[in-house]
Length: 388
Image 1 (tube, rainbow, N blue to C red):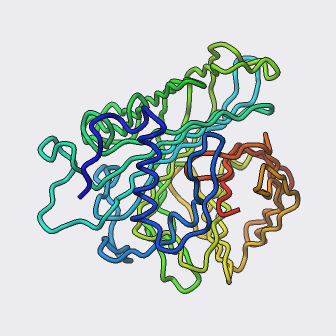
Image 2: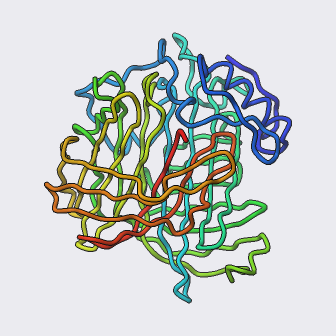
């Protein structure tokens, strides 16, 4: 168990560097070479972070039932998990805007017999870290920020009632034990926002009743559920000088959001490089979750979902994905436009990024941003690209 300094880890670059260095030693057995972001902090890819060995952590097994509201909570026996919201919003003037918030939990070591959960009694010593990412994306700007903290009731963690996911002054807080209705509040040097989130649709269990396979040989899997049908209202305030985009003061926003919950002790196997993930809201009212895991043999998974809670999985062999346009950002080259064909669903669409420069230059680097699509169906959603 690691005893960390007694102040929030997000407050100084020195402490952040220490946390990243420590987690890299403990989490990365054989990773890609590191690079540095604009602040000189060591970075690594999402793929290298999530492809490490899982010995000693709780395994992901088929047949486990996902239950609510219990599984909204943290699962500290697993190595990592996240609460992940993306939103496609518009201002009162009709300006498009994308918003992302993700809180990660990372266990630095496997659980020990008789160890306590995250509570007041264990004080400042903890083997649980939390990392939160947030971003606001328009056609002409992409603002991203990050927070780190130890798990501690006063700093970061997950509370049962009212259900709360928090890190410093970034907070998801529900009115009861369930995820919704809730508020999401983030305030940072670059931007701030406060959203009201509501949903009346059942949760969608991805894969086989929440058991989501992540490799062709089924050696890697996660527990995974989603809420694709969320109504959003609130306000956003970019704080940086963004004269070109015209959003320089507090703006009312509204639109649709998507929440993913996922936990595992290993998300990728050693041969996999990363993934291309899509959350798509189609103009017929359905939603499509789709991802491709890249490796020696690419693996595909998708589910089409409806607001009444119904849905069906799509066979991997029916999914065709082709990158159409690549965009260079620093040393990384990202596929920012795709053709997606699923004959069994009569889907043939082309996706386009609202802003191709939506990379996340944080301690874990990846591309994340809002998209729209045309073809057999129109609509909008979000795309995440890792391992490039």
